Length: 125
Image (tube, rainbow, N blue to C red; front, top):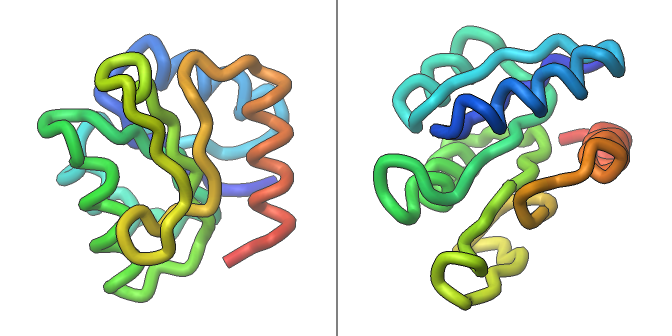
């Protein structure tokens, strides 16, 4: 199965996603902010990143995705967000502004998470 990194400041969400993904056979690492996430990517070379939008700053996940793509990171990025609930705005894929492979509103049902992860891993990076 795949090496997956979850970057989110919500420990409950991280634990829920970790359990779901590990039960499906994936190896899961977690980080709780951008700095930990970037260090984990450098050390672990994940095959997929599950990334929150809002962490220490409202746009941390977006900035992290932009940085990763500029650095040549090719693995799929699944962005989990509750931003539309907080701001009333909807975000979508945009190769320059939000360079991720898929968006999913939180909370994500387990079957949906597994389906998205499988789909993104098949696409590869």
